[in-house]
Length: 333
Image 1 (cartoon, rainbow, N blue to C red):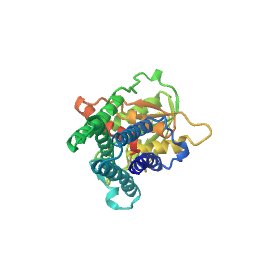
Image 2 (tube, rainbow, N blue to C red):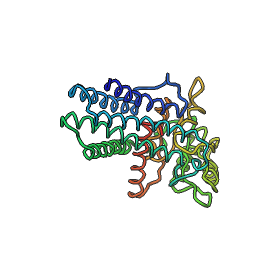
Image 3 (cartoon, rainbow, N blue to C red):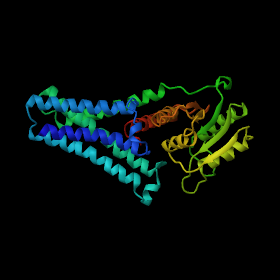
Image 4 (cartoon, rainbow, N blue to C red):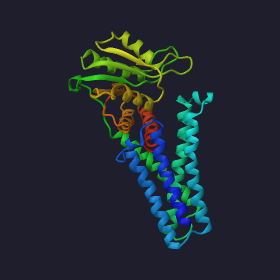
């Protein structure tokens, strides 16, 4: 009976993890792609925990009180995080509409919750397999260190995945023709001018436009309190460069990359013949963006701006993106 309870809770955690991720974006469960890298990772992690729990049970013929209680407590804690995540996602609470460290508060809180969720799963993995290998309790300290190591390695994998991708094409002659170039929003400074990073993205779109490589430029991004929208600032700066030869459109409701990719899907991939779309952002940001496109089952290209960051800033953004990529892979946030 103990094993049945444990396996039921572990399977419930896996199912909720996948369903939560897709329900965030109203993607039908029939469209879940189990070959998507994030889903493979989720299934593999749960499989290792479930196999370990089964082996641990068979070795001792039953769980002792401590092992059973620990596994139940940690698994229930992980399961409850999806309920809390749902509340944060749907609740109409004004502080959730603010910004924390330049990040929408909802996304910030969701990230904290699911980093904890991932840690609990790694803790459970370390605890169970520590008991199997040592044939005795692995101890709280060893399990904690094991979970921290696994968490570090998962984010390190995200970092190497990001740095292994290259979306820079310096020569416009090698760039194909596109129906739409979507410029992802970035920070707007206090004088309603785009930040230098944002300028780089806009200039890249202008370069494509003047080279006759794109029919339409789509600027995206809402606004923080007291600012004009990112899309509006981009349109203003684009026109100051000369306007190019492309039709310009703005979208001012989205505030996260996931929302912008969702907008791309709904705007350009619902017809019988999907348009050819290129997403313009920065080289460190595009790997996560293209992974989001794969999650939404849309086929887009990525093109990096020509703006060069200092080594310190590039390292900072890559580390931040590695965290964000792993969390999106596993939890859709």
